[in-house]
Length: 278
Image (cartoon, rainbow, N blue to C red; front, side, top):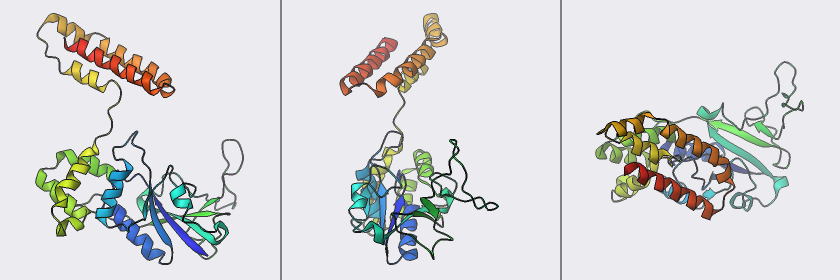
């Protein structure tokens, strides 16, 4: 049977550890089609698919093997599914780093004492579709019956980093020189073409998460200089908390709002900012 290996993750941003995982997957499964699947979701994290794809290309992922998906850990998204000619003749293997062994999705693991799968909250056994690759590698079933999760070693880079979140958290603290050094460490192609370094740095400067609603108002209030007793009262009264509560109550409605309604709500918040400044 053929094998399709999918490396799923957030990749905010794609970095040297991800590249090491990709290379390790190609080595562990030399006859497989190995791809990296990334979404374009930027709700909680900053990097859209196009930037992740460019960083993956600079890192060295083979052309056509960094693909956009609408959800992780699935072979149904079009860019994955089109690589499968016959599901009954294809083994599906997802690959993650060792550091992610305790995070969802987890393979179904029978109780070692009873051999039975654990029960869900509804009292039924959990699905046994996703299994550990380790222990099943000599009895692999086609993706119509099972998929498998394989864990490969975590690789440190950039002086001890292992995750994208560490990059995002540390990036603001780095000097221009440190940023350039980290870029050359994470993306070796920049060592041969140093003109790429400022381009990559600019892409990584998108590290900040989108600000939560009301953050600008919090900032405006906290930056007010107490020149008068009235200003002190504004800073000390429950106004800021009232705004937070208003946003919290409005959030469920915003999920169902039209783009025009969301724009009007944003304008309302901007008007509140202007009011607080004047």
